[in-house]
Image (cartoon, rainbow, N blue to C red; front, side, top):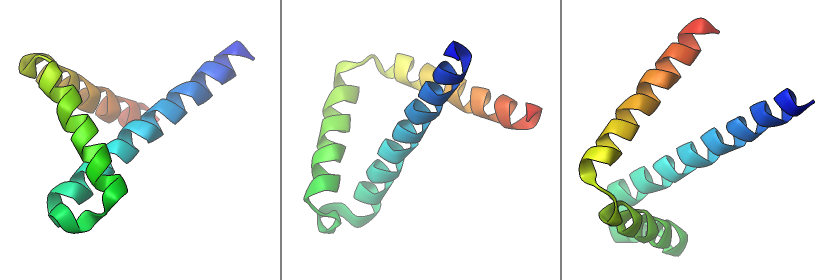
Length: 75
């Protein structure tokens, strides 16, 4: 039961992460026409990433992409 809970928790985390990425993409594509929710989410993500080390963000993004590619290849 704990394994199933952890698997579902990771699924929710992945979906929320991808949702944030889609919102950022929409904000980049539409600019100020994207709406209040998209603009505020984009501002929050931009402020959060400004606090982090850029190389750490790049390494985390590459590791996430490699993990997703490996996971999809194994299933």
